[in-house]
Image 1 (tube, helix red, strand yellow):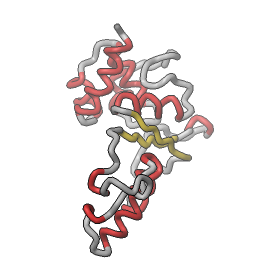
Image 2 (cartoon, rainbow, N blue to C red):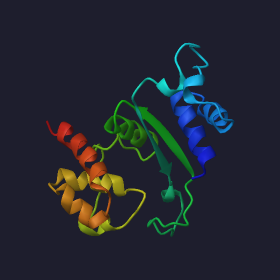
Image 3 (cartoon, one colour):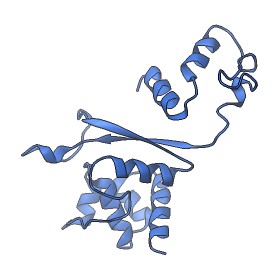
Length: 169
């Protein structure tokens, strides 16, 4: 993703003028010289002051097309995206997954997915794989088992497992 798009996304999510700060830095200003454009008191190296996580999730909407292969590849284009912000990864991903239009209430199951072969579904990168991961975790799959099948980084899988652990309390 080009740096300008990353700056736009981060600026939109945070409300902080990152492109402005980046331009000033490119002109030779130091962070300590730049003031917050809203408060006019704190320096740019201190901002943004809040801790949060932003998740950007593509929206595939493959169910609208007949005969389309649901396996995602590097050449596929999404039909849109959602962006969610939260105090931690779990909150942000939950918000984002509620907004992508799959009819789910976040990562936890609220409608039954019919998956005949869970291992095969975990191996295939599809538009529904995140929900397949949820189902696997509910059925007792470990983070290591899911990592072996999906190759998704364990950090993300552990965060998703935390959501399942809370759901199962």
